Length: 134
Image (cartoon, rainbow, N blue to C red; front, top):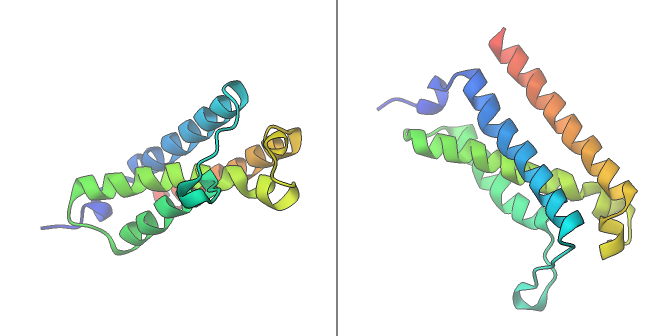
């Protein structure tokens, strides 16, 4: 068997991370601004989507780092990396620069900070793609 991760073209890798990242970011922000903030309290503890993002990013990064012999695992890891990255990047400014209230999450600071971090993430992804492609 061969390592499919090595065989995925850079363009496919880019799209498998970029589209889930942007789609997740747009969907979660639309949901939060239109439906309102809904918190998850497993075991009575508040869990932000940053934590769910980390739970996706770390195993996905490990799979990407070591490769896989199964195409579906490589694709799943790249998609999970995009989704998890969006969740993490979306909450950095909110958790670090505000008091983390529901109103703060819907604030301009949180929104513009999230847009800035997602933009930096996308720029890094595109830079890596261009360096791999050329």
